[in-house]
Length: 151
Image (cartoon, rainbow, N blue to C red; front, side, top):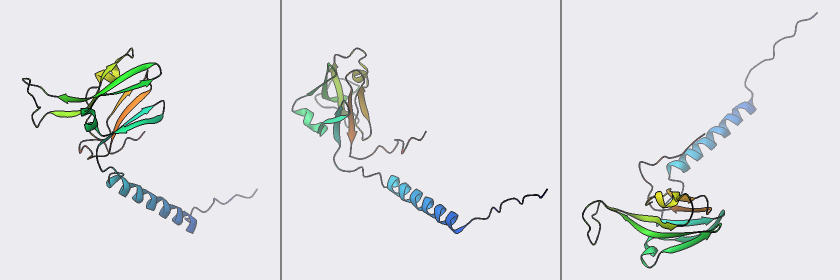
């Protein structure tokens, strides 16, 4: 019986090229993420119903009139919301939060109504029974927000 020799485990040129390509891709993706992923411009609300974009508007457009959306037999009314604690005033103080919220919904769980006001890029309101998602895009990102979620 002859004894087999163990295989040689030396790196080849192809191993080095593969490692270089992976490193360059990782650096490129890190740079893209560091640059904000293209988030800029005016804050925009995007409404998605049954997986398709149904509307896109600036939150300030809600000053004219609320917007109503229908999905899966349910109705949602989106309004401009002001979150202010204190005595009632004509205008909120500079520390008040102004954003969008779902004021009315006839869905059974009312999770979309209880979500409250969203006012920063990346935040969203989801109504599962109606299959409606309202997401904010653009504008400045929240400095305290997560950069990415893995796993």
